[in-house]
Length: 312
Image (cartoon, rainbow, N blue to C red; front, side, top):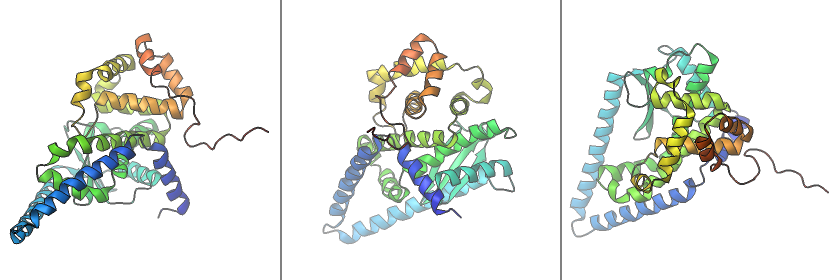
């Protein structure tokens, strides 16, 4: 059972982790969805009211059936994480939930050969996280457990930031084929919640080396992560951010470019732990260091610390 102090710390953690663009992007998303749904309701309550109501019921049943089939398939083709099946992994999950103050139900599954290290799904209020087996292997060392803690905290952070009470409306819009119409208005908020999840994950570890290694393993797998050098990745990320075409390409997707996530996390580290950020910058190539320098925020009060007392 979570204590009041733990709940307060969890709320403070989320406040400190909010990406700056999340709030205005959420307002835009809700407004756009509200307008579309209002138009839909106006269209329904026309002379063909009965037919419209039947159509709504039919769509709702179709969506519900699709979700139920999805949940069954996941349980049939993946291994559920429990204290009996994956005791070490379950301990890390419990730790992450406690740190973030996340109380809602989340089913976690492990599967082999998934395209990404972790992915999150929502089934009418029941959230599920699907993990690739190679991404959560070797939990014997504390360092490795910390890396997996970062990976899981990222996914739980996404869920925590995305106001799951709003998910049904977004799902209905998607199932009705209106996602492309609303994508320019909803996608910015969804991308912002991804950044917030990454920030929450970092605050769960407060370890730059662990966080960077966890990201590298998630990007290229555990075998290639040891050979990946940050300099090349940061230089690539800098060129991606400067590309007008790639910025346009990011307008519609609900997830940001992987390289942008990498730079956003580095920028947050510069804000929270500038000394560690400087150490990272000193270790990369001059071109990569120039990219990192652009991420340094203007002088401000560090996150999570009270304002300095004014001198008399």
